[in-house]
Image (cartoon, rainbow, N blue to C red):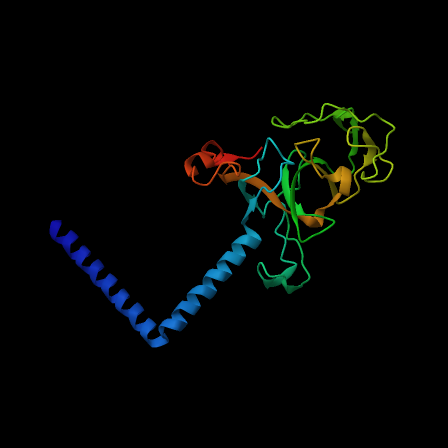
Length: 258
């Protein structure tokens, strides 16, 4: 039996050696520059496919989703759950050099649900990505009474880490100029309004400090990019960089987003 093992091992070593020699011969034949160029092109295509179809990283830039998501959280976004959205722009990243292209959305595994935290293209400026919680589905009647959110006439339970930073309540009958649609009320007493077909109503968990559907309107389904799923890294921007260990929020790493 030992002789058989030695023969198999010898044959395997010979196969590995021949494989390395063939690979080296191909590289010499193609040239180092071409070899690296093929590697870079292949890697670029793979990254583009993953970002388009599978997952994409997202960083929390503002406090509108506190205390569920904090400034400095880095998230992974599931881009195929609601249906893969093909790119609507092709160009050089981070330069603005490029052009718009027609896009479509592939069939979804499921539609957004109330409570889902969603990354989407900001309706007023599609070049910006926003993240909010879905609270209203197509056909839902949305109303807010003294900061209490009502969906179809019933109170919608606040997320576990939602918060209100302003104890004052803007009374019913007072219309804020910034509120959408005009005349719908104010931040704390809003509606009732009905969510149109193929649209969603989004709100931040930081209820008193969030630019959401109360201010810019309903979210078109076509603008949805994906569902936030996990925090893969987090750090506190307020802590100096030389305190690197303390700067990282270790307890938030690998946390599921709810």
